[in-house]
Length: 70
Image (cartoon, rainbow, N blue to C red; front, top):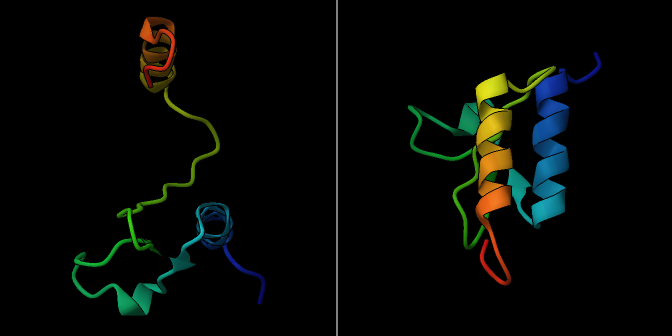
């Protein structure tokens, strides 16, 4: 049976960030992240499109950054 799109996304993000996907069965009651990583707690969400308010917020943050600021 092929993986669900959200599982594929979790695996792809885990690989990109050098972590390892935590299977749903290993997450218990929400006390484990989607991706195990030494430095970050990573939650992954899979959507077809991002909501407009989030795109606007990202554009605002990018416009407000200057030089070495992130």
